[in-house]
Length: 337
Image 1 (cartoon, rainbow, N blue to C red):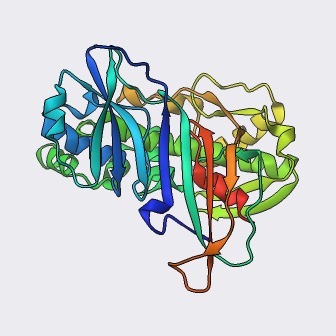
Image 2 (image 1 turned 90 degrees about the horizontal axis):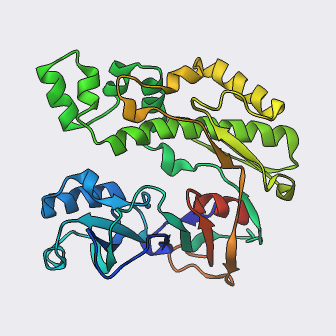
């Protein structure tokens, strides 16, 4: 079985920014380069050192922890000289420009990936043009699916029981039955990560079921949330979109897809109304369309070489660019055969 991210340098991610710079503005933009740090942890420590609120530091998306990554962040009302004094292990900041808009989630064109796949024997790296746009394991770590499911179902006590955060515990010590209050002590970004994980799990299940029924199955790969189904006739589905389940997308225009969604919602014992969370309105989820396949651009596959980390094995360098919201690990699952 191949190995990915055996060392951080094997997984390099460089954001393709969408932010437009100016000579001056309310916000300073920086390249945040990090290694062995996830984005939320880096932002939390940066906020502490700059005496800012975490929510005031803008970024377009979370980047992998076990990797070397570069992404644009925005900082309000600070001076470059102050930022230059920031010291965070595994993190460096490089000035990019100024502007009047903060960087928000989704404010990027895509990501460039430079990867090293290790521990290879006879496996081949196949050229592909499109890949299934599943959400990968990174989306579902640390009980994220289960916590999100409990939040959607308004089972706040059960959600809290799975969250190991000091702020939550302190709140419950003072008000033992105030589960909503305890949840509100957490950053909205973190809470949304939980409900988005559940919504993503439902989407994966919908797509895998549909492709298993309608496509020429190339291979199936198990993961913590079920099974990824890959097909060889991706061109047939390249323009297809399937909705993320949420309120506002109750009726999809493809009856076969809608039948699959209805069956999954029945199994999960949820309704569209459940995605409206009045107790914490910021977590309310609308349905939206997501591409079933995405294009793998600028794909380059190097020659096999001896793997210095795995005796008797081989490695290969692979690079490509994906649109925002897509997973390089998913492309590798299809490329390596």
